[in-house]
Image 1 (cartoon, rainbow, N blue to C red):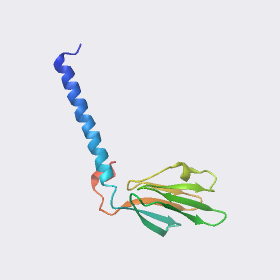
Image 2: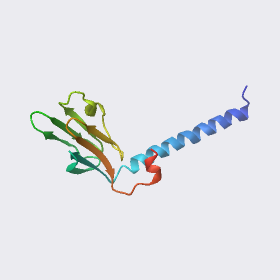
Image 3: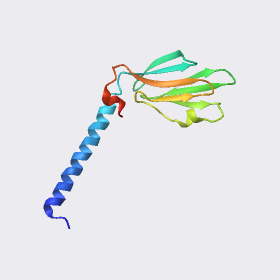
Image 4: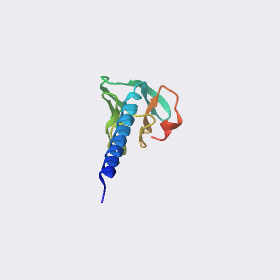
Length: 126
């Protein structure tokens, strides 16, 4: 059975844990600024654009057969549509934190979030 002091200790520890989660979310959101998206096809960079709030649009890679439609919206990016058979790139969903990436193997398309600031050891452990 918990004493009154034990209950207070549990409450304080929960508050500290929640504050830590809140600070971590703030850190991730604040560090989302200064990021870019690099899109490569067959190892060659075809488009680079900033990843920021309020920047909305889409574009199409490829022709009638073999295409990807890439959508970017409010600081995140995804492959919205593709005609590849497995649809793994479409199912990957939205990405917004460096070094996340989406790969479409049949068409050799890579959509990668890169940071403008140098990577720190803590950035790798996310």
